[in-house]
Length: 542
Image (cartoon, rainbow, N blue to C red; front, top):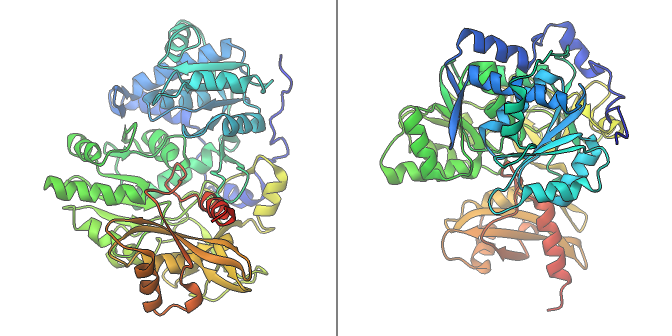
């Protein structure tokens, strides 16, 4: 039984105040993804726009499948403005679900496959989802059973649909049913809410980020231009298509830029290299660890992957020597760092043509205005560290929770990123840490990233993540979680940090050696989990 007909963001005026100037300036295209798909299918119907491990879609077949699905969903009683969630791997069906939602005027809620009952239930409840698509089973997880468990606590969730399963509620059955149905598209506002995407929760309870057709089209089109992406070319998407990066660059870029997206169901560097050579892929946007492994695979295979031109990496710390080392593994590719968040996708686009800045900064600010401020929101001089505030036409509309929006967006429309950084005169931004990633030791602020940068220069350290740990006398101490690539002990690493010239209090008092870190879908280290882990370890009896 339906319990509500209003979404949780009914407070949101369209456009919100911080977007009004961009609307007035004509910054947005007056089109939806559905409009673009119809135009692409008419002008170039046979172009293969989507490839996964099981098959492919042309513009024409993708549109036909999405239209049939939209008709079937409308027949099930779904109304424009309601939310359709999908927790689907990098399968081409995700593109059809996303496009069907655009055709039907439904809001999509992408959920990364790593989440389980607690997170999924929270997200679906918060956005009042009416339907969810999940794989019948994926990597030995019964997602259909999980979704039905969640459904028991979700009175708004009327439908659990499967993908690559069986029965009348499976994706294939819905498409088959819809092919014989008439479907009339509702009028959809390109400036209205089209997506609610929950943040990874690295700093607390996940927040529902709201985007429109217009905001996402803006960032995909502008970044593609910056990277020299041309219609007819093909890119690799190994990141989850339910994460903002994979969603925009994997599912939407083919319709916005006229390219082919090759989806990877699971990351494997050798397979990625084979796909690059088989499809003539020109670039990707992915997590930093993928760049390291892809370069190593290219060196081991003795190929420079000549078609490959760019690798935009982010989501995890990037040591300065990583970029030139990766570039050296390829014939023509340039790697560069980018910076952004779900709320402000790609504040920086990277430096595809400047190896020095690509290696030492987190990219060029292109389509955003950026302020660096102190704790009282006073602007700081160029080159001085402070919190990064950003606003631009690709910025989110707001959060699903109006109070969260009020706290995160300044009166003049800047988003508080929570990241610390510096801005140079040439528009280069460099991330120096997180505002909440400081270690306060005896009343003194210590930057975790500063220590991590030193640890990354030790030859035995593959990756380091520094967090605060409880300290009986000083309040907080310094703990370093380390992934080793060779033999080393705590004494050697402590001596290395001490020899770097850092103050003595910045030498980690404790080292934890691990095989990997807990991470978000985009590769960011879950420092909240590391802090919780060390708190338990410190409290445990010796």
